[in-house]
Image (cartoon, rainbow, N blue to C red):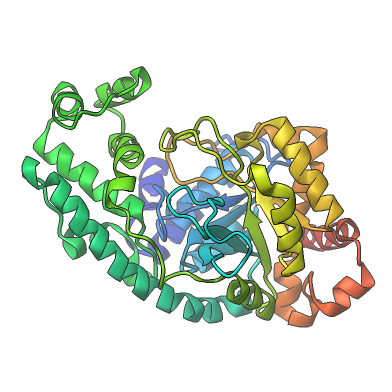
Length: 428
């Protein structure tokens, strides 16, 4: 198998074939036929794959991480752990550190933050959180935990599809949920179906009806009444771009989500249940800090205010209900925001985890800001996640937040260094 064909096969339908293709690529690397960026110390713990929404299979995501020179990579799919085993196998092939987890939404309506906009742009009283560093022996338990979430989400997805069909009926555009939306997901293989899948299917329907380029741009501006920015016009004019449909999706997301969105209720567990579940499987519960934003990296979010006006109160409460960590994306926040957040983590002895949310082809896997000396702890954190995963896989009593571990190293910084040292032993 030649290199070009092997890279193409990384996104084929069959996971076994994807891993076979990755092994072929590794053989070419070992022969000196593929030149790579030197493996550095940079990390990324928040990579989405086709098991939620992304242009990358787990094997392809690991290959992109390897090409970027990452030392470790982490899979964090929405409402799905089904890509984790492939991700771990791929990381083993490529000799890169790997950590697995999930991202879910939780109800905050029984907390002091009921009615507030937390880190979810689409709905109040609902927050995104990560369950990081899931022990490999707990993958099936995690799948069972997620099954009712996926079933409830399907019902809501069907309602949102119906709403969007009503909006686009005047333009002769309609989608069938199973044929057009579920079919482009990994639902049949345990993956989730998100709002992005719905809009991705819509983008493709629009591209079928209107030729990409001038005709499609005219439809967007003159028929739909969307005020496209110069950058968006530039993207939609580039008809040769491999991921044109992703650029169109991002524009549609910024305009239409608020018009077809149905509140997530049944598919969201309570924050207390989620924290308890993470503890029960030896994983790490992490609130995903967003903070007030002015511009979106991918162009699909508008400027908006989130937790910053009540952050002190929120972090204290998270510590009180036994969250283990806060995860944040350094490239998406100002230095003032980061300094404030990090000081609060120190005050309440919370683990700090980083990860740049990868789900779009224009995003880079490498986040240079983590090379700044002040963020050295985030690199250690990635290795600590790997250490926790492997130790807890052997024995849940060895997990990073077990009673024994906390008693031995009550200060989170000391515990991170201990587990980071353990994590580094697993990748040589």
